[in-house]
Image (cartoon, rainbow, N blue to C red):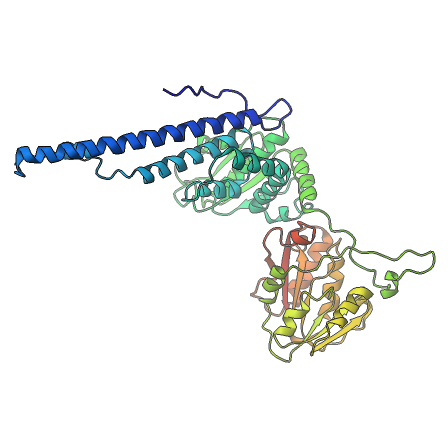
Length: 480
């Protein structure tokens, strides 16, 4: 009989930190359980060996004669008695995996860390516990994992918040894109039969948002509350219905589509503030149109101008350049060349590239890596007179504010008819609803020759994290 007592102490201390005593007692109980499993497996193996020896003696008695007697239940009972499929090592491994999976689940739930995860992270965690590589819940592994999770708890929560809200409405890809009081359109929330559409992740996103709103509201989360309210109000079959809870109003139409309004403007504002903290505002990274490279040079008693710089990550460059068919000898303009992260792949494809960079040091670095087909000019692109001479423009213009709009429209003037523009832009370009953003999108739709193609394509979340910002980004593609 095990002397390990039930663990009923809280998982966190009065300070809110994960209790190391709690973790230690769990790991001690795990060690004791595994030791008992192994002892029991050895005893079973010895017992089954004795049963098989008894079977040999029984064979002497019946001489191998069969009989008409047949019972499925007795046959199964005999198989269990003889332990025909018993493999001690495999059984111990299975028991260890099951035990460790249950321990990790308990730890995340009772410490509250699971509630910080969004649907995607919870699924990834649950999937990791279903395979053959369940991490062993040793004191060393658990301690290291929780040190990392607790240190990253705020990031995990903010990432989950961003994923949940942006999966429900693209305007949340920008911290100031969704305006309080706006309607959210949910396509195919319900099936044609009036039941939940389980091929959609909307229901999971709504559960996450309910949980986040409750946390901001100082209330105990009640996962699935909106779903239960809808089901109680809606009944069975395809029909129109309207449901209100403390956080939402949902109008569902007979075709399964729905409109959703968030009832608490104060909570939406808190969400936008958290999104701003997570995405981070791009620092000033654009020179005014009337300034030249001299603003970066230090003169007597005049400090040099210093602008933030967000070089294009290699993975982003690869995705963006998939939008362009690059043939050998075509003329390409890169008007905000930086250190050349878009320039070098273009040269590798055989393009002739004119690279414009306003910062003297970065322009010099580009010239220092001079390659055939590359021309570098240190200048302010916005002040250059347009010439329709390029087959393509590929660019990652400044992110701060709406400077990128001026850069894109200036770049458009350098394209020859039939050319293509590919620009990496902040997601606000595609989702924000200010008059300036809507005017920019209307201009893009008007000038784009390819009416059937998508102007904006989302890049993966956190594509620019390696260079210091979590801003969501898109690739804009226009044909002239």
